[in-house]
Image 1 (spheres, rainbow, N blue to C red):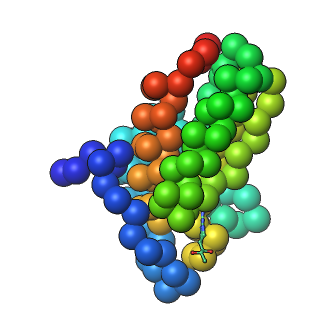
Image 2 (cartoon, rainbow, N blue to C red):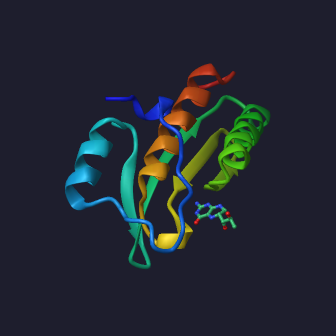
Length: 118
Ligand SMILES: C[C@H](O)[C@H](O)[C@H]1CNC2=NC(N)=NC(=O)C2=N1
């Protein structure tokens, strides 16, 4: 089975299939630091990363923006002093697609290489 971070996103349109409850559990098992939140009935994947400085948080924020642009799949990003909260979901299906788990795994890869993690 391909690790999520090595998988590629597929084009996701309004009739794409959301992950099932069983797939959600299985995919979350591969992303132990992420949690599933439900906001206005929309399932979202979320993780906070901590940094020593705001500048390092901002550098990481821009790096996540870079992979989002490359894959045309975009997160919500909350950048604070010492912390970046990343939230992935698929707007087109108002829920979670396999793409969101791929991008969460790719986000973890960026974090592993980021400066100033605390
Ligand atoms: C037109 C463009 O491809 C779409 O709007 C893309 C852009 N980025 C996106 N990002 C996310 N998270 N969900 C989407 O449905 C989405 N759709």
